[in-house]
View 1 (cartoon, rainbow over the protein chains, first blue to last red):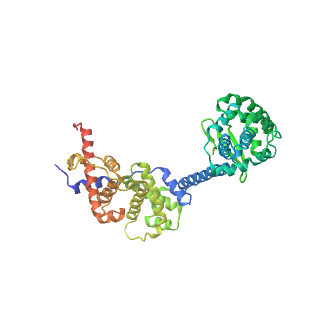
View 2 (view 1 turned 30 degrees about the vertical axis):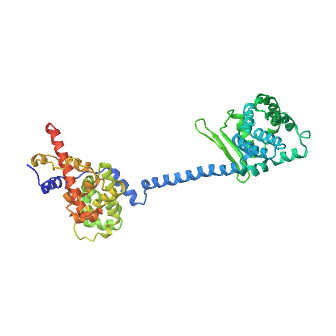
View 3 (view 1 turned 60 degrees about the horizontal axis):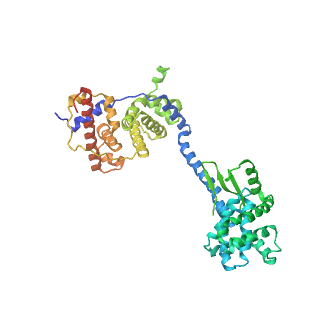
Length: 253
Length: 189
């Protein structure tokens, strides 16, 4: 026997219409608060949205200026940047075959040791290889990099090889050797010398960033420090690297 | 104290509530809360949801109490607010017209005698299990007594959609009743 729709509906309405269920005491408590103008429940999602917006802005403020600073002052940044400048100058190498090589050595070695005092010989050597290997010219950047390197370059122009400082003198044989890729091993001794010179220079701490970096380096002996700072022209001190073990950020380019 | 409270008529309480008398509001709430939770339960998936609907409904009752002019039963007025509060809750928290595919196109047949053995608790559970759209239409039509035209206006669907939702809701309910009976009496299937 089947049921008519009406009877079926009635089955539900007759049994459920008068249904009474006692609500918990919390309901009146919440109504009472809402009538008094307190809406604690509804504030929470709003606050969490506001908090996440603030967090996003803060994160943005921390990371965006760092990028601009890296472009403005490439020499003050880390190895990768120095590498790039090496490539840039190697394009000038092609343009001025005779004088350019000397400027290259100063340009590459100086920034590395000024900033990365813990830089090892091996990595410097590696960069030298890069110098030879990476011959792709970047004409657009040439002028900029030349401007950065200018002071030492002028020095060389005035006093070619003999009149130069220790650094240049130390490099000079190296430059000649580096013209022949087969003698890569021979590079090592002169590089060591330049490092000694550079080590003297590293003690010149310029700016807040260097001071901070030295302080951090005293505690953190890792290659990538827990936090790395750099002075930028426009924005004061900026963070260029963070190393929290599993979480690493290193400003490159 | 109980004796004193009962001396207030609903009319007195409503008037005091109009002047935002918190004590009167509490008494009015206590007068209708259990009955109105019974209404909200049919629209909710569980008790927690129903209590949320009840809370929103009563806040609205006290905010709009000036609008009650005394025409018609006060309980009916409160009940309508509860129903609308429940629908509003659905709009905020559920996809209104969530469509559930039905494999069985044939109407399942339900034995009326066996069905009448089901108690309110069973029937309530059956309604609560329905998908939101079906639940709303079935409640409004079969229990509240609204017409398809009114339902269409209240929840923003066409009259035809209301009819087809109701018919699907019935089909699902019947299937569930058969399953329940099979379980209860140990029938196979």
